[in-house]
Length: 277
Image (cartoon, rainbow, N blue to C red; front, side, top):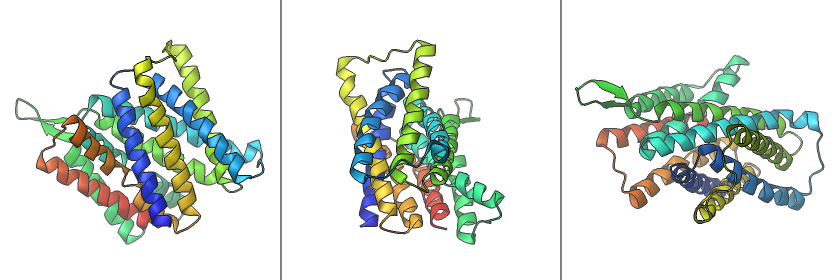
């Protein structure tokens, strides 16, 4: 059951990221974030009602709120990266996020296992292969969206750290606190930057899809952790870039050189090793 739920989360995240990146090619990223995150928040409140958990208190949920802001930054960077770069390059790099909670654990005295060190090496190797491409002069240059993908990985990793710290009393309320914080920051940012919060009608279904799939992923993964080992759930849910890359290939006709495909596989394998260790 845990494996199926985790794979469901990966599928939802992959589809949501693809739609988010696609929408960000037509709208301001902050508009995509504010609208889709608000749609997802409505669904999460329904989850809290179904779960029936008591409100744990504001102080207990502060780490989760901080996690939501970090996750918002990560999503914004990912959507922008997917909009300006190749999805087959940006998505696998963003999957390096498990390195962040691993580094936090190491700082607390919990050193990585041998498998995790191997995973880190593979992730860094994969990122190096994915992020560099030849220019016309024969020199090497950084692929478009690489820096944003690294920022996305950092944001997603901090999201996991904060959510873990804030979910001791209730996972459902922690996710709601995270999403409420991200929606608040996104709306304020939209107002400050004068970005429209009323997207064109023809793009609204796409934004609804982003919010629904992102929320669905949160629910699937949270449920999966209650049925199986967190390490296995982390490994399977980290496969979301595969879905994004396949959709970009099939629907957008995006093709990558063989070296980039190998680099993507290496980066994803490394992320899986880090999470499994």
